[in-house]
Length: 335
Image (cartoon, rainbow, N blue to C red; front, side, top):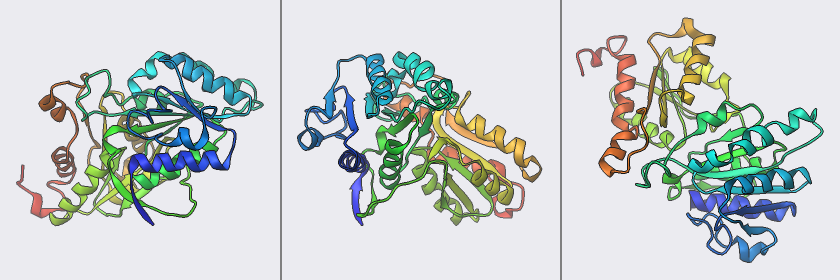
């Protein structure tokens, strides 16, 4: 078992899969000699050569077009859209081409392509380089959407993504690149559609996405000291979503708080809340709470950006809101 950073875990996944399968290649802006904006592809050019590590022009639509076309010929491209915000430039290629071709061909065409992209605020990069747009992608049938929260999952999920026969969008939160974690030395993959129960609990379920998993994990320890046992679930993939794990947990705890970095309006939290409402409404003891960003572009100002991001205090307040005045007498009268 080695302790490595999040970006190194992704680099290792790319290297291992390129060694395993000669059809895998990577392409994107500055992924070759420069090694990517966050060092994720560093060293791969020397290891695999310029025919498999390809720098592209600054044209996101062309990058996705390259991925769609090459995957249809049997190659397995892993392309990078530098900053998720620029997904908007290539939505036609993603929504109308990549997501539809397998369905429209009756399953005769496979599109084993992976789109890596960086999302999230906290980097003081302004409103056009800091968004979390996963809800837009979750809405499109035909593509899978992955959101790792730690180095172990990042490596295992990316290896699964590269081996998948369908288009996969792999969302890397920029604030996680420096996060260290244990990663096995031996071969492993993490399956899609299987949530991780980060912490077991009995009083409230917290479902958190991406880097919010780590903030929620810290919160569960604080809540435990106040007599609240919180169960923390990391879905890992939002398409496919592990509905059973979420529903079963809420049926046990009777309370649900959903935490994500994207704006609350129309976010993944709304989909999860609707799912729980449909499946286990009778088990709910309190209204579902969502902790998310306000409905505004990401501010450039650092103090405003900090306010924009969900933090531990906001998660604690949401948990107390669903718990206060019920079977936790130690909380009555607080806040």
